[in-house]
Length: 257
Ligand SMILES: Nc1ncnc2c1ncn2[C@@H]1O[C@H](COP(=O)(O)OP(=O)(O)OP(=O)(O)O)[C@@H](O)[C@H]1O
Image (cartoon, rainbow, N blue to C red; front, side):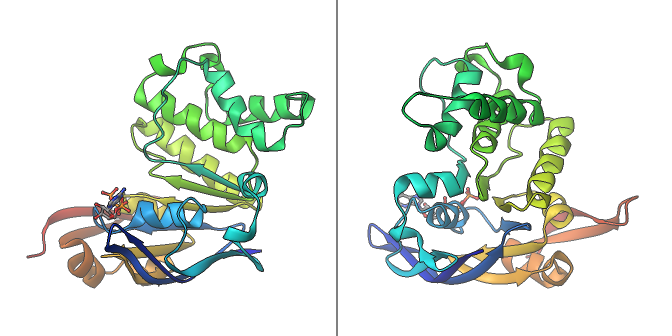
């Protein structure tokens, strides 16, 4: 079952933030959205998660319009790791992760399946030792891992993540990327916003470039991440190297203009 934006336009306070965006993402693959600041990437992710209602066009999950799903069904099927997911109240890290199971729970609270999903999500994101720490007191990177665990605990069909590597140190960036790749390999559709071009080139099956609210390009990394794109959309020159694994390393080295 795929996730599609069909001629999606989103207007807010008289400004058109997304214009006629059409995209298709498949389960079991990783799609990475890149683009300059303010291009509309986070807004697009919110539309794909069903949090913003399109001004025109539609977002469809298989044959169903997102707008036709109940909140609970949508929450079960789509997990969103938000860029601005602040932790506003004092709660232990494990209890925060447990919130990710809410769409699955009956009236009697978490059962053994829920507890196992919570534990597994915390293990995958290296958070087990943080379980009883107040989430507000964790570092930015630790909070990021706990919040990723919360989304994973919900075992969604679709995992949408806005800059999931923000604040993570190198080893946890590598672990998070491997975790998201594994999640996709298990059949989940992963869609994420990244700023790091090298990480995008390494993990993406499909790279989606958003510029000024429109799709500038979409396709496999090799086809999309070209010198022309870096110059036209990002306005930088990029040095391309090949890593020991044969995959590209992309380093912005100067302004294009
Ligand atoms: N609540 C809002 N009200 C009005 N305009 C908004 C709102 N949220 C976002 N915008 C505007 O929509 C545009 C796209 O914002 P968005 O956050 O989607 O961009 P982005 O590509 O994710 O940027 P960044 O890389 O800086 O995170 C920006 O011009 C932003 O100012």
